[in-house]
Length: 476
Image (cartoon, one colour):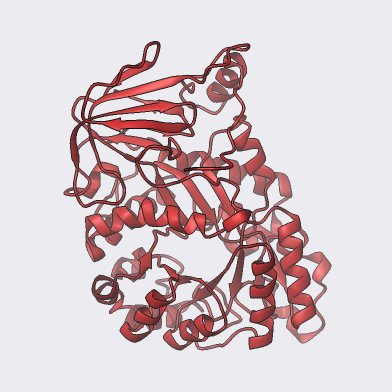
């Protein structure tokens, strides 16, 4: 039984229509008018269901949505007088997708320097743009992994702008010279002025050294509505001050974050690549490992035994990355890291297929907008599925992503069930052309990345997008 379901209040059609049209979106369907008490119903008929958990399609199904929940799934006719009926025409009905690693406050142009130069209004507007784009790409839930507090989530949940459900880390925790320390290197020769950087002033990152500082930074995140914490415990590729081999934070500092998270009944997620850094994180109580592409079979088995999750972004493992103007530049500071990353991540897919730890889907896109951003999303879907198989990839994008969302415990902003098509789950639903278990292009996957032809904001094979019982797209 689902308990403590937080139902979004109904909104007058006139208001929502105005907002939707101003954002260039379809008017959400199925809302009640003011004064009605019965929740609206939508009945999907003649659909084949991928439920998010089983490697099969359930043929000739009917799915009834009432309010923001799935009320019934049946191969028999469902009686629902007054419901809005949508004939799926034999297409696939499946859960809305879950992207377990996004950076909506880092979608500005110009890289880290661009982020430092932007006003909060511009950063926030880019974030709204990103939220709308992700929903159009079929993602009804996203896990923001650095820099977003709950302001935009409140506006999305009121129905005033379109966007996915958001799970938030708040400001990512970094030590001085760690992966989340975006301050200019020139400041290291003197003393950093921590009050004069955008990323720190806006809470996008939190540079903390020592146990008391880590506890304070963690608690500030929870004060801003964070659902869990993100901590940089190893070096990164895109950053300049920290080599990949660097070990970041002391054991006591990591334990401080883990304790702060446990006091809120939630978890710490780690930015990490190297195998021994993953093992260290497991020993210190970390439950989710983002990136983690260098993981060995032995460590993957340990991760699985502990019930932890791995969240790898895999498109960067493609040799096409060397065509990128920044990461593929032989004279650039990231180039040696990129080569080391590619060499050390080449066994990831084999490990994931053999061990099958809890794996979620991850795009990790930053500082990219428009057609290039869309091409990255499309290729991440495709390359991930090529690496571990369509079913495992789809499960990572749906039911396993829902399990990770539930790891926030009593801190969960959406305590219902996500990522599955079953009675009582949230009504986050896609209808797509074709069978994604056989052809990942049914959800927009594309074999090209940097050389892909540009496309507009709509993913054509995704015909219906419903989130929380509201339809945001219907091209049937």
